[in-house]
Length: 253
Image (cartoon, rainbow, N blue to C red):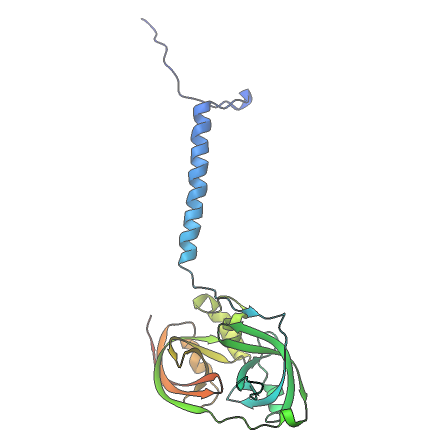
């Protein structure tokens, strides 16, 4: 019987402290492919996520202006036109997940100096109120314009809480944010309808019910869903208000 010597496959023996060259090449290629695959997987997953937007707190641009507080039906701050700047209406929030109903009711239709931090996303701006003080003077005395009716519209989009969607959290929308939005709205943060189609160039609307009153628990089943709903739209200075008839609401997906 004769024996034939054959070339054995590379084999790693730990105590020899030597790795065969073919095995080094294999492991190197595997690591490169594995890391590259993880990168491609991360890219594919991130591409399916909602755009978080560019909103956020404008800490370097503190807000301090004189105007009037109104309930429409959520607290808003009306600022008169001046110096070539048109009149503006700002939605308001308190610290954390709270509204500013107490401050608004205590100073309703009274000239006040309001200080706070803007939260801005595109043409949607909300002011996180820091301090409200009564004030006097000619600059504070003005009569805000009445809302301008824009007719009845059928809009598609999503109901969000105005503070988080403005940029307090990102993306501030979708099912992953539903629980947070529910807490914010329960605390008095104004609801915002984010429409997929614009009305006079605006896609963000302060929401109210069909009669222009506060929305309650009836919006909970519709939060964070893509819906279609009809209602009347009116323009309050530069702010759009959507009086949604939730009886017409329909979930699209």
